[in-house]
Image (cartoon, rainbow, N blue to C red):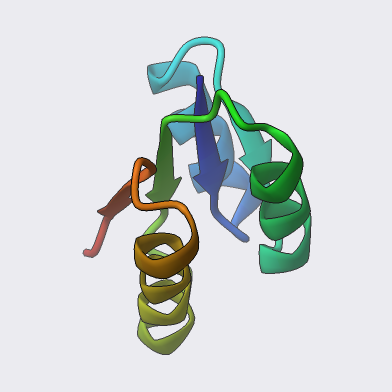
Length: 76
């Protein structure tokens, strides 16, 4: 399964529609809690409305704590 992080509701809906079966989150706290408990999660898509620093921190956390988790950063 794929998780989506995107604070903008319209963009979050588009991303979730494109990634059928994904679980979408509006904030980093919700995503982090999900990733810590969903061991089968294989990818996270970080949407373009997420600030660059927050996106980089999430990618760094995943690299250290969940090296099997793919992190895809979308930017405008």
